[in-house]
Length: 215
Image 1: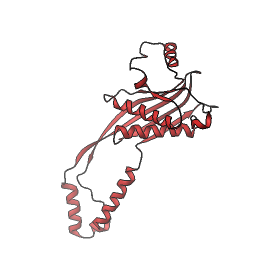
Image 2: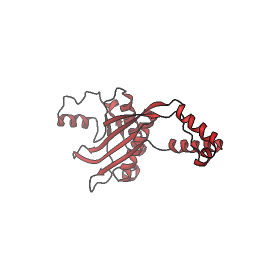
Image 3: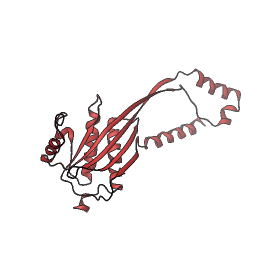
Image 4: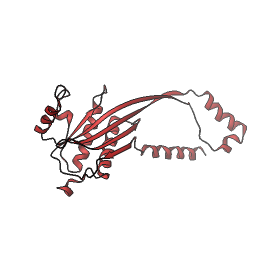
C-alpha cells in the first residue's frame, strides 16, 4: 500500500513540476492596431532588486522570444548604462533612442514582491481514511508521527509585474499586461516562463506576429 501511495505522491510532484510559476492576470491592447515590422525593439527592465541578474535574465529572455518571431530586439542592459536617461527630458530620451534605431519599447516593471512564511509539518501521511483508522496501531503510528515529528518553516515569494509595449514614433501605448509569478524555482526559470508567456499573449492579441508574414 505504501508503494501505491508513493506513486501517487510522485504523480503529484510531476504534475506540479510541469506547471508554470507565472500567469497573466489582466492584459489590454489598443484598438485597431495590427502587427508591423519595427526597426528595433528595446526591452527595458525597471527592477529594483539587489540581484541584478533578475533584470538581465528577464530582458534577455524576452529579447530571445522576440528574435524567435523574427524581430530585431536588444536588452537595455547591453544598449545603455543604468543612468543614461536619468537627467534627460522626454524629447532628449526619444532622440537618443531614435539615434540607436529603436522605434518600440517593451518595459518590464516589478511592481511589488511579497514573502509568506509558513509552517510545514514534519510528517503528513496521505492514506485513505479506512486504512489507518481501521486498526488501533495503524491509527496510533500515523498520528504519533504527525504529532511528534519536528516540522520546519518555509518561505514563498510572489512577484507582481507590469509590462507595456510602446510605439515611439506615435508615442502610443499598444499593449499592457499585469502578471504574477509565484515562487519560481530559479531566476532562469522565472525569466524563461515570463518571456514566453508575455510574447505568446502579445501574439494571441495580434500585437506581434511572425515577421515573415508581415514584411
